[in-house]
Length: 492
Image (cartoon, rainbow, N blue to C red; front, side):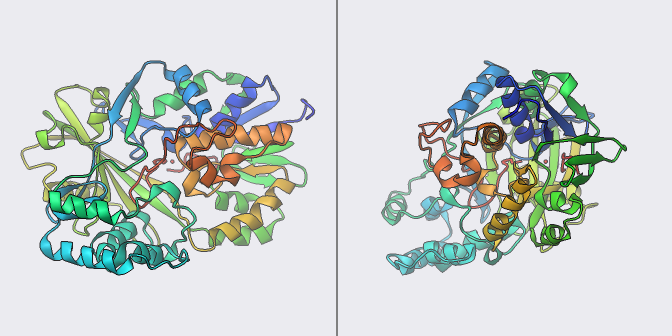
């Protein structure tokens, strides 16, 4: 491609930064990155509150499907990492049960255990084709017992939508299925089984939270090509101009947009047909509540990473012992500790914004994670308007109708909400969507991550995809984002 053509990138999250990094790597100079807010990282940025506690925008952990991503992480942070062995749990029936629950149902009360076992026996060898909805898949795969006891209530709680409203193409390796012989052996031996999960090993920045990664990448890019405070208000495909709220504009030949796809469709001028499609997208918002405490982390939590909460008597679906990720996530290491709690919100699951932090604290006390004797010294709350891109029924057909139209206009909509593909929305996926979009624009190579999520997540050796299957089970039968994911720190 003629090197004089202008590439404009909207959004300084992992996808936009990845695209900019790769352009610099290739020696391509005619590019510009614009961002609406004043910090890089998007949903993967971190915050230090007024008491000195560090918080991520959700329960992020770092693992990879790509050798390219692994090498870049080493360049950015070197040896400034903390490595962890995952220890995750499910809290239900007033006890901790090792993750994944289906391998450890022997710990359930007898009535629940019998329901789960009968349900598992009912669905063995049913041989039916893959169902259309996630709810049907849960019932057909796990049986009505596990579905009623755990899977259906948990997945509504985390997604904010009934599993009947979700498709099945997003799941891939994110869902642990059934090995009945293993479950029965665990039952007889009363053996905890914690070995499933592609992210059994992960790492975390020593200082600065997950956002330290993206600040380090941003700092290595030429400042002259980066502009903050640029909120997009209109994109004119006819003359290829992006207009901003501050009255300025920029011309592009090719545009890599990482803002939410529904927002992108609404700011395209003279495309009312695409703007109408924006209303078809479903997503959930996330409330992130950080609780900073004085004292030492309780022994029962001292080795735990995160915990899932399926029952309705507490508002959060997941709690991370965030001070366990790095001692420097608290201002006084060894003398303080912290919990990071996540609450989903959607049109089907409203949340009282004024009460959510208080409700989280009450829930933590209800399940015994903190007591009245634990001195709370910091409460931090942020609502992420766009938390998780819902894999709703009809999503794939809708995306397939929109992407060719956008590319005809020279627009690549990529990233967590730009692509709207939860199955490739972790940090490694997101940065590679930016890298691969650049390669496709410049040389026509395939966008493997966007086009072939199953291949990427299976760890096949193709191009930059790592041979080793690192996996991405950042949530349990549900979204994590991990990521994870962004209050949308985009340019809309």
